[in-house]
Image (cartoon, chains in turn orange, yellow):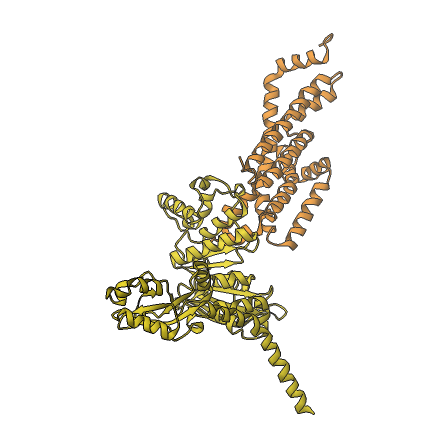
Length: 219
Length: 392
């Protein structure tokens, strides 16, 4: 690769290792998605649940806040003590970091549902479940989606670090680049797709979030 | 008895009594207005009817059935509910909003669509509005939707909690018209909470005045204006309205002259002239043998036809404007004045002539209404003086 500038080296790397990069890209993406999905499955109900009680919400959000403060490398190492090396450790870490934005946003979304709309819903004879299904969830969906979007962007970053505990993903390519002499192109070959993934996910979920916003109906 | 409230009481923790002891019976088709200052418990009573709040003690009976034994969700679907802040679902179209209860009741799509069109017409809004979202409508239009939503499943009882409190006066009036129209057309029973006395007096057939959790007075608007039960009610109604109300609730029968000059239609014209001359009037009311009002004859016609040999019945003008003795002066007086009659005959239900209202009578009435206020005050000072004398 002597005599080529960084851009040419990068093109060269992609043309030789295109499939490999693609594999790592999808692996990276799936690790992030699994962690966030699990966090959504657990976090949204928790958010709904704590929105019914102020005391509870303080405790739960407090715990999630503490989790969020632990540096991600430290968290990975702690989880690794329990689960060993491998992909599960990273998924669990992503899950833990995703909890706070999802719980917090679900809670906020539920809190922001207009009291009068709920009162009217109850007054015309909706059950508690119907109020949740037809009023609260649709009205807070865009805020919940914003939480998931936030969580996914964080998750993509954590997954990159996760390569240190042997989970694979685009982080592998970055680490290889940092270990190699003159590995700038290799670093970029891992880092650029990672950044791209974060930006695209953010864009798509941001679009969904807008579509779900109930106040954007005046068109 | 459609709806009975028996000794309703609501107490919050810390012995805060919101409603002390309310007993009230409501017949089908009545328009009941709860009125009182804020904190009087009127909204609490309303919300206990559809079990948004559970009474501490006492029962609510609908058609004789104790509502505490019913499933609250099913109960609420049978009661229309309109709240002050409208409470339309912002993420649903108007169509979805007004057919929400039918949807909960699992009506078919066609039936729901038909209902939506029927309801938007009731709200006096164009059909295109069905596919709009609430935020695209003005506040008044939104509340029209809020009102008709309460009729979506043919509810017989409509509960309204200060529905027009947040609207400007002109919009409020048009919505009051709407509600009044719905009430008269559909014959529903309305339970209406308000703090606006004009609104209550205008809409209600029965007014319930509340203060600090207790009922002060339950009566028709006329009787409340005529006989306020206590000082609180008087203050709530306001001095001005009481004065204004005096002529307005008086029936015509009370102020009319009870001996109108009349003649039967089979009399001859000379007899008529004789009667006019004796009573010093220029027109005569004409009745048949049973005293049923038939027409009116005036001196000009009489003069023209005097030698024709006809009877009074032949020459009388049968297009005579009359009022009933039990109609309210308020409704009558404007018509009399506007149409420029010097006098108007008063009839009873069988159209028999019982009296006459002249312009002079109206003057008396206005005079009494405006000056008796001062006389009352004078009476009281005199009594005060007497008592003072006794003490000496």
